[in-house]
Image 1: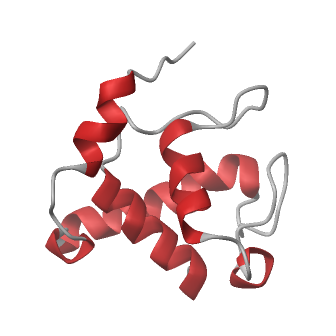
Image 2 (image 1 turned 180 degrees about the vertical axis):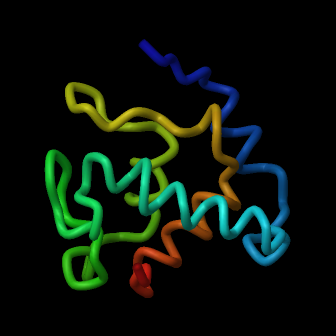
Length: 105
């Protein structure tokens, strides 16, 4: 079981860096994470599976901050784990931007 430390989310949020500070290499790693790790539950094309679809159409109208929070903190009672121990707020912002834009296969 993964535990989220209360101060961890706050410390990630307070770093002040922007998603544009993420290197091209790290961006490629994050894209791979979306397609492989997220895809293992949300479908390899992100059209749904164990978890819901993560396509721009499926996410339309969803609050951006809700998606960021879900990725960072996970969802209790579901298989969605918290990623705050692995990903920074800036990286999650980048991932959410990609999800809203659509992730090319």
